[in-house]
Length: 467
Image (cartoon, rainbow, N blue to C red; front, side, top):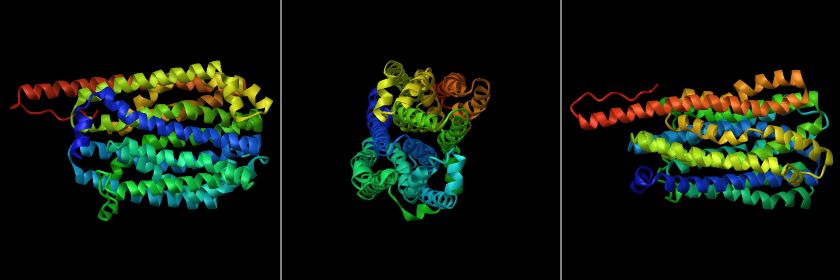
């Protein structure tokens, strides 16, 4: 533990950010590659309706992942801050609470999903011609949701301890295995979209086996003690409050899918639902590395905030933002220069490609500023500021996009839907900028107080600004 604490508190920020971010980015890219390949196999093995069916089913899966992400990220930042404050017992208590709460949450969501599958799929925009494909896929995924949930929560705890490579391995194993199993089940066993779901569940199961090895082999700083599985309302309150922002972001994506699939079905057709599904997969490939940078940023910022090293919190914010902006700018350039090539990777349907080019270029018009918003939101998760973290996570997709897309689609039809994407990016980035500037001023104030108390140790030490 001492070695990891020293690394998080003393190692050069640039080197440390690379050490923690590169494994996370690598793992995220493998996950994105899996989504790429999965969609390609479904497109070639089933067709455009298969893509549309999985696109409708996917948000339900994301809600389960969001619940686990809420616990994992909220609990992970609590672990980081506890370790920074040299409170091992509280960190281990948080670990036990993470596992027990994830189990019960995923179990409850699975039961609800199985009972209400058809109504949920209809709610998420399944048209009669794609409903059967969505049913085939999701009926399998639901039974394996516990494996998705454990994986999502555990990756955050590994990174919170500074073990980014182990988190990377835990994510890469199911990603690569999925790519291998997909063609076997989809083509070899002729199982179609159901085969894609079976391959996904089996792959996640193997990933959980590795996670078990990590925690019980002594690699983890934190020990699993069954007495810590008893839920503590204070720990769970803080975990849920901070993790709510991550939950809101992912659930927002699912709510967004409900709205978009229904509006695309109204102002367009199943073809446009499929186009959105492909664009969503492309955006996932471009956005996940930004989230990988954020995953590397979180333990550094969280630990140093707990250790009251506010100078290092500001430094890692600056460097993580710079790297995320560089990647988001590269993503923007690739989408605008090579839209036909990117879409043709997924499908050979001429209608999907031609209409998709227009939609993709419009939707990605301002993705070059998304990197800043991702890191800005992560700052508030890292330091335990639940309210702004939640607000910023909800801003782009819920508070801005959903009201705007109804107005835009009513005024401009299908094109209005596509133009809502860049509008939301600009407005949410502006809101994030306001909160980040405000927080930097608070960090500066805390740093000045700290220097004052060091120079005048007999004076009363001001309390931290929780503002």
